[in-house]
Length: 87
Image (cartoon, rainbow, N blue to C red; front, top):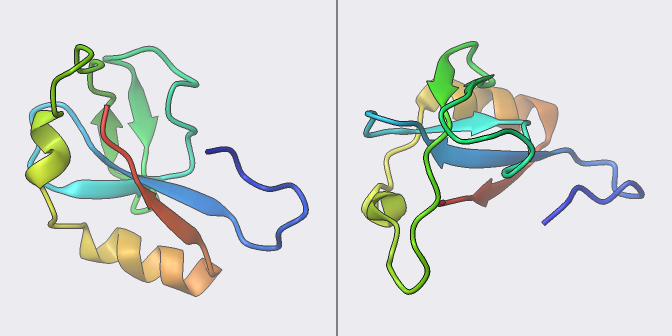
């Protein structure tokens, strides 16, 4: 899903970084950077992008529901639309 250029709201993507157990919101579009690259989150925490899950398998992060509270506050203040994204 790509941001709609005609929509006033910005998209954020809730991603579980490598070796973490919480979702952070980032404005980086999934797939725009290679796996294992560091990307910033809304709360200024940096996470490493995960590697893609092989076809036919469920990403191990799919069960992680916990979200960073600070990222959530910042996304709400900015009026962002959130998308949960698993690789």
